[in-house]
Image 1: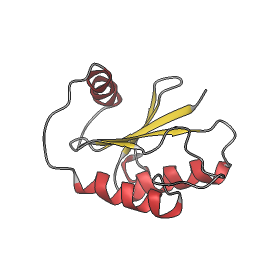
Image 2 (image 1 turned 120 degrees about the vertical axis):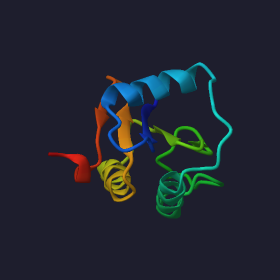
Image 3 (image 1 turned 90 degrees about the horizontal axis):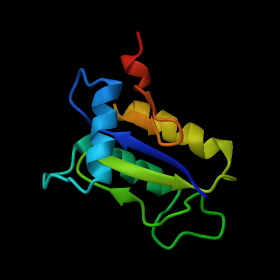
Image 4 (image 1 turned 180 degrees about the vertical axis):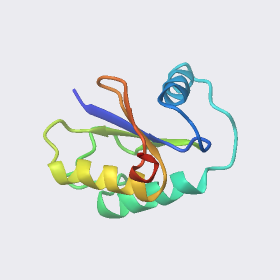
Length: 117
């Protein structure tokens, strides 16, 4: 079983409910054909520069490769035994790129640090 997170590029002012709605639409196969959001592209390039998802090595944190990347999100399926540093890097990069983080285990949504009051 994997530990699943996703990062989302939604409009400014998006709420946790907006993120959950986007996750639900994705799970139902409702994807819009749009150009990738630059925040998603930046995050994907940064995370895969450190943790490749194409031809990963034996110590990869990814339970599923390649990562699922869409115009507005990246899905990250991690081995439950991955290093804590991987999670810290995901959280940091999500913040740097202005992405909201969705924890699929309990439905929690974390805004990027810049959005915290």
